[in-house]
Structure formats: structure tokens, C-alpha cells
Amino acid sequence: MDEQKQQTPEAPAPKKDFDLVLVPMEGVVTYWLSLSKLLGGSRKIARQVGEEAQYTSEPFVHHLLEIAFNELPEQHIRRMAQAKKSVLLDSLSRRLNLMRMSLLDILAAENPRKTLAKMTAQYTHPPLNEEKAFRFAQDLTALAEKDPNERPEYFNVDHRLKVDQLMVVLLFYVLWSRREGKRNLGAFTKYVASPFFRDGLALVVDGFDGPFVRKRLRAHRQAILDDVGMKMDASVDMALAIRNRLDYDRVFEVGKSYMV
Image (cartoon, rainbow, N blue to C red):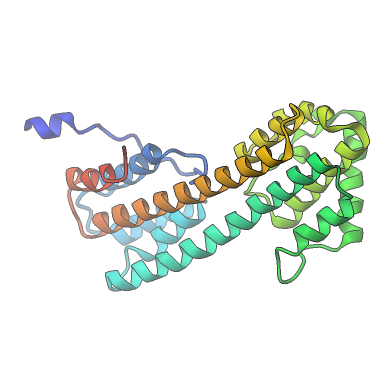
């Protein structure tokens, strides 16, 4: 074994479920290296990739596994991957916007009805109506009055939630803040999976001023979108390198191009 191969890190078995928003670039590269090692020189690569796709819920990676290893020309695969990237980044951007709106409205002690109106305006067809949204949010309020630790998942804010669920829990935070005060939201941060919302909520609870929070949320949102977009690009290039049957070291070189 030559010196270069000795320096190439061994990759663990593929991680079946991860999130491009939360996993670092190194984790994305490791995933594709793991897949490269798993497939090796297999002649039944399409079947093995199909099996891998069944256990991978990350939407962009799942899509790549479905399209990158068939008979389509590479340019078609890149075009389809770009379309999926645009769709998923748009969806993520809207969800981050919902979180941003609710945080700024908590800061401004905004009327919750206005908050909901602004959130539903992000979509051509509102995911839920006002009556249903407030009914569900009031249910969360009743649960919070008893003991939120009984069902902590109900108070989670996460970009992976369905849009209507995300709107309801964000509406709860606005309602609770209006009733109990911003500082009393601090107890709920432990239930929040989204770093974007959790960090923003901490700033609101700590009393940072509106202009600063607004600028910080805008910068953080863009950083997340740029970071996820780059991970998607890395995934496309590494998947196609595997499809083209480049060896492990060459696939690793592709991945290193995306790491600092």
C-alpha cells in the first residue's frame, strides 16, 4: 500500500438518516465515502443503491440515490439534481422565514392574528385556516400550563416539521409570549431542535434589541441556505464520481474539494 493510501481515512458504515442542515460538510463527505467503500467494484450497483435509498430519509440524498445510478446521461442527472436543490432550498427558506417572523413578532409583542396572516402569506394556498390554527395553538397552551415535559415534542420547532405543524407551534410561542412575557419562553428552548430558532429565541429572551435580532436572523438564515446548497453540490459531484466508478481515493479527492 502506497503512502497516499495509508493517509486516506477509513470510512465507517453509511449513516442511514441525517439532515443536511445539521450535519457538517465532513459528515456529508463521509457518507458518500462510506457508500463508495460499500459498493466497491460491485456489478449490481443499481440494486445496492436502491436498497440504500430505502433507508435514507434525507430528501436530497434520497433523490440522488434514485436518479444518479441509472441509465440517464450525466447532464440530465445534474439538471434533475439542480431542480430538486431549488425546490428544497425554497422550502427551507420559507420555513426559516416562518421562524424569523414569529421571533420578530414575539420581540414586538405583535397581535398573533397578524403573525398567522404573515405566515400563511408565504404560501399560495394557506396550509391551515385561522380557526384551526388557533384551536391547536390553544391546545398547546393548555398543555404548557400543566407540564410541557409530558409531551416535549409538541413544543419542538424544527424545519423538518410539516408546514401546518410548524405554524401551529410558532403561533403558540407568540401567544405564550403575549400572555406570560418574553422571558418566560426561556424554559422552552430545551425542546427546540432548530439552532436557527433556538439561538434567535435566546436573543429575544435576553432582551436584545429588534434591529440587531433582525439583522442577525437575516445573516444566519442566508448562511444556512448557502451551507446546505454547498452540501448538495458536494453530494452531486461525489455521487457521480461513484457512478463513474472512480476508486475510493479519487472520490475522496472530490469530497476534499468542498472542505476547508
